[in-house]
Length: 576
Image (cartoon, rainbow, N blue to C red; front, side, top):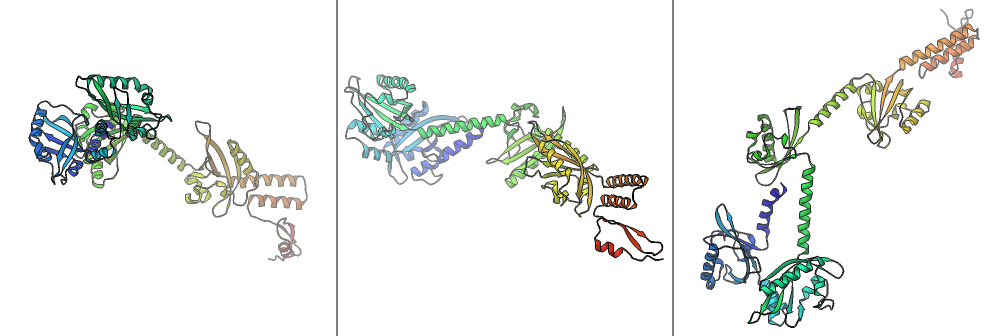
């Protein structure tokens, strides 16, 4: 699918941005397509060449011969690779003639025979060749072929010469002694030497042009990729005299090609790894392409999908949902989400779709099966409702974050403590201890948490309004599949009434034992005060005796009241 995705955009981009001029010509020689480079090359405005005869670009002295050549080519078309044909001349709009290099490729589109011409203005190349040429006729001919570096080899004497650029491509300064007729072969990669030598020998023996892509190895071990072109000259009896040609460093181009191949492989791997179904639709809802790792989830076979329309192939309610999403994407140019469901063999199936714009008149649609996710969400919803409805206060703390913050608290926790969610979410639950942090039970919990163990304690906690309540707390650690503790669950119950009753019951039992044992009245009074102050937080009590004769109060027990207060009460007269 990736290839189909990229081809049209890629070839369009190549046609528009190519530095080479490109013409598309029909059998009558009429230009039906011209890229910006060819128009600029010949001095025409954008679109001005379309509809003109190709002979308009040929100097007048060559018009007739070119027309005959074009008609002959149309009868027996064949591709002519760039560089293998002769140089031609073109005529610019202002009458200036320019040297050209042209390759022709016949093609057929919709039963119409066309020719694609790739045109290069070699004016600058010829000027450079003239400036850099060695003062010999054969080297000038070699430089006419040159893209970057060139060579010359006298097959009779064995003499060899290389241009400055040839040396540089080999990683050497010009005229470096490391490049000689004996060492030249060693610069070719070992894996390419035999094929290269055989190709050169064949070209010389058969009088054909040589063109090959090979690797060279520089002295520092660096591998470079080159394209080599060459040909031989012959004497009157056909014996080879000289071998000359050019090389071009295409390493960067090769690296770009490799990156493209790597990206293509990566994209394919990503598509294969994704569980999503991917579709390309036009704005009319027609399926242009698809990628479906699980074709059994489709409403039509993959072969029957492409070319069909959503309203034809999808159930009505699904087609309607997708159509609405498409219209919104077309209107806003932004990503849109759609959801739909239907009854399948395994029950209700839920799907989520993402629709994004993708070039002119195209939309990319990615469909994901979210049935399992929806089932998990439903389970979590029920569990959260159950946790929220329970009478016990429940909190969950994240033990993988600093200070174990609360990440969940139910309504019962708020009711028991008086704290709202915004008061406690993200905080450690120690705020319930207020200033009463020296309780043994707190240390017990801390040890259990550190060891990752469950525990249960009853301790004094304080509501938001500051009032004390007795809290029966059970904490339970939660471990993941790797045996790592991730959370603690705390279940809390307000047992204040039970605790007070327990204190009074125990105190009452102690007092009765003291009475039975005839312990002093003052001791019994102190026990009663101790029981009351323990059961009722922030309470201080006293027991006074009334002298029936004098009608005055006398202190019997007031262990925690101030001396000033007790003296003020003593001897106070209580009358009818």
